[in-house]
Length: 188
Length: 301
Image 1 (tube, rainbow over the protein chains, first blue to last red):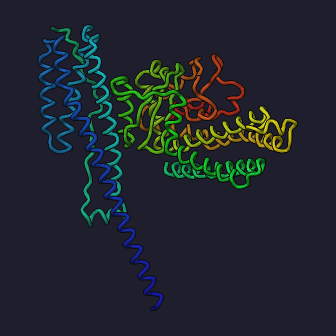
Image 2 (image 1 turned 45 degrees about the vertical axis):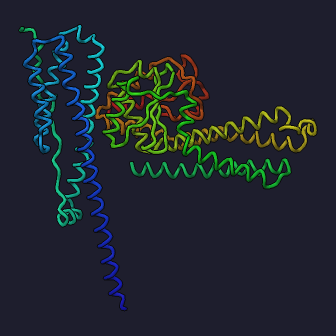
Image 3 (image 1 turned 180 degrees about the vertical axis):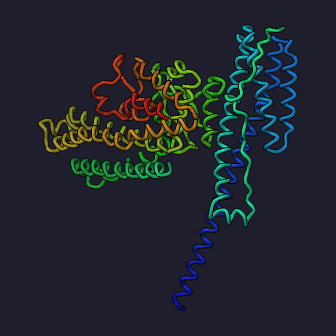
């Protein structure tokens, strides 16, 4: 056989190998992003489980904050029912905001702040909130890598051919740029 | 980061090979002294194999046991567990096992061969003196070591160097007591055998500090800077670790369970002298960059 055939065969082999490599890389990135989303989900669920406990405990000391309790409970129900990423993000923002207020009114109740059961719940809640934040950070990192791979050459060709789709980031309202109005319950 | 992981694996292999050569030489020398020929070499190589395999598989447990660390549950230490779990999520690795060391000096270390078999140990002093943000900074630094496989190398160094140091002490003492076992009577005037034993022991005395030097080079200071930076990338808050390091620098308490074989594993250079930060010998073996420099770099991030 002439050397030209060998060169062509070599090039085809290289092209096939890079195709396999690029495809596997995309699959890996997609799996990582899915894992990231699953982790967020686990932590969100833990927060859903905590909310009724927290509300009940705070209620024992501050029964007249009923409106706030209802809002947190309602936001929780809505978040559990949320469908896609966008829905979920909106509902979670409401939950986070409600819980923020709930924790803020605690400041006005020294008895509550001294309650061992409440302190344990508060540690769980703070811990879960930070785990949600970290899970979100990990998920967004993975999504960024996946989306970059889908957008950039040459992996974009493989992504188009096999229908890899970009994923949405899990963005929340930045609490720093949007300060929450804290009602300390003084106007009772 | 991937280059760092590759470099760590390479250095680990090199160290294990070095340990084999070292034990082989000692075995050959012993075989020559006692006239048993290759038996000494075979025994030494078996010892080296057992040591290397066990330092890979059980090095973490050895290090944890030697620092008297005790595993804690989420019920014992909810705050610590929550922080470690959160940062493990951020790093995308399984949650490491968590240990507490009964020491009043604030410090911490990570061990285990890979992220799937990682352990993090903190001292009681660290839990008592750090607030949530500072503790988070410290855990972030330790998880960075886990991510970089720094602790695989660190743990292998700890067990192998520990073995070399032990062996040199053993040989020196056996010379001081006049040879090993029943040789005392024959060679009481210092026959060639005891002389060679002394030679080996003496050589090991020289090698032990060199081994310390190897630790220093292998576990280079850049590694600590890198872990500081990566830890800050995980927590997204460099001032947390900076504040923790400042508290550690200000703490006058000495560490009792740290030694030259494990010093490099800790978050900050452990000192065994009360009041004084580092003894002159510990300065020579300094495995960590000065805390002030680390704080400065964190503040510049």
